[in-house]
Image (tube, rainbow, N blue to C red):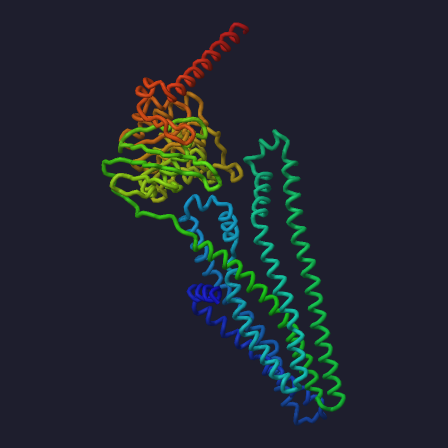
Length: 599
């Protein structure tokens, strides 16, 4: 009942007039058999009597009434019904899409990354309004179908009680079997969701342009293809096994129903032979049984739709009931001078046994330039996730001066270039302006951001300029790894905020471009708070404070000179990298000199 109420509310709020119209036309369809069968009974009796000229007018009238209620009215009702349903469906689709998009947008990142929630999102994103409205459609059909069945039963009851009782009883096994098998079918669909998602992932890899070079280089396309085929066969075999079982039950139920209707016909013919039923009654019974056969099949199909729609609606309801991420109002004024304070932060990923971050305590002054350094896996990027409010610490807190202790406040005031930035298969304009959609049409600001990132010259030379799609599959272009990184940097620059966060901003750049980007980073952050994450240390000499991470702990904090004088972990890291860069440059010089002499 809750599902019916929820869907009825959706249909009613989407288009009230169309919803009422659907119910009215189906009620007319429901009472049509009373007029149709009575007209048939009288018409057949009139035709079976001696053909008197006086009854020609009555015959024509009864024939008209019979055709009106057997053909014209039902067909017209169904045409109007589906027309109105399409109207309700169209309006409801917009609302469902908006609700789902809003919910996913408001979910915390940890929730989205949960594999069970991914399964739920996958199923919910595939919801068609027709699936959800199926409960409303089915309920209206069943309600009016019951009225139609009662109309037929009333006519049969007036003819003979045994005919009426037998027709009712033979339909019961069909409903029982269909309900049982449809439950099994929907259960199998839910069980296969994760494997279906994995199978789709295999196909995306096998046929994607991004993976083509590596697949061809390693020659592993067929190996992945066989893996996809093996899983596809497993899923299909499970479905076929259930389908075979369902077919056996359906055939058995149909045989029982057919045998029962055959008994009714034999019994009616016997009554006719004994003179207890007129020829018109026999014709009426035959037509009534045809109607009931169709109704039973339709009922079974619609009940299947109710259960399927109920399962879909349960997914939708579960999705809508997921807790939203706490949101603070948009904060336009700049932050007051204060501290970003991290106190006793502890965090571990849901599937991990050990803490990724342990007892992080540090303060960052507004306007300060900070580098977070450490080896890969030391917890640098995880700390950034917490700072940006993409995840919540298991204990401890992040306070943003007088603004509040909710990390989402930090995100409101910050712009970020993340390590795993997205390569949008959209226009250059989209790839830059999506960070601040309100300024989407600001051409000057887009150009300034691309110039700051050092890639404007190349992109503005293109025929379509910044409206060029960054994907050859859409008649656009592709970029190198370093160029994509510059576009991501431009996207971060486009979002004007008081706090800048750069997570491994030079990972795909060579030494020369790395130095240029660091210089640009320093210029951009001259009047802002800047936090940059890197395992490469040249940036460390350009900042006010260095936070050194090791195995999830903050082991050292200070300026470059202070930490070098301390001769601790940072000193050893910096010395090792400086030596490596020196050896590398020396090796290049030796190689160049050797080649020059050889030529």
